Picture 1 (cartoon, rainbow, N blue to C red):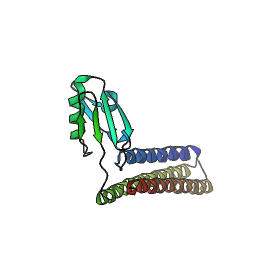
Picture 2 (picture 1 turned 90 degrees about the horizontal axis):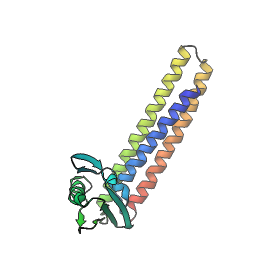
Picture 3 (picture 1 turned 135 degrees about the vertical axis):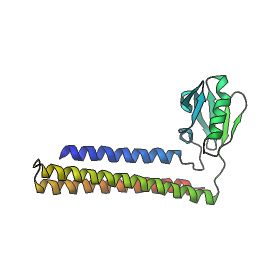
Picture 4 (picture 1 turned 30 degrees about the horizontal axis):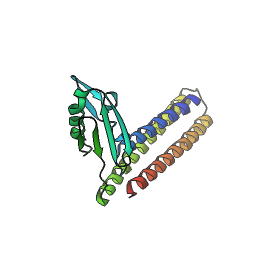
Amino acid sequence: MREVLTEAEDRMKKALSVLDKEFARLRTGRATTSLLDGVRVEYYGSVTPLEQIASVSTPDSRTITIQPWDRKAFNDVERAILKSDLGLTPVNDGKIIRISIPPLTEDRRKDLAKVAKKYAEEAKVAIRNVRRDANEALKKKKNDKAISEDDQHKGQEDVQKLTDGYIAKTDEAFSKKEKEIMEI
């Protein structure tokens, strides 16, 4: 019974970490290097993550700077950022690539909040699916006579408590992100 709970908790933690990564990629009014996490650059014939061919930093809250280690990669990096669906425009001065993060409009903030809500709902669905799988595993163990019916009910209560805790963490992460998005 312990192994079912441990596996369920591990899978719920993974669902929450996926949510955190999705939230990190969501653009707020602030510049963060995680905005560029999904950018892949066509570099010498292979598709490479941006952070493997350049140094990415945020000198201030409205600017991201990218310093490719290879001078020949400047145009490739610029092209990759333009092709990404981030809506950012890089400025290349030959030494460094700068991206200015424009302030968000009220409508854009509301749209981003809706996207954040969608990500949170997807995480909740994933957590509930883990609960269902754990309950099925407990039921199977009871049918195989590995655990008693009382143990099955106790296990299901523990799984429900775990689920409630992770749903609450998801809601907390969403409200924090929503506040960050709506902040001017």
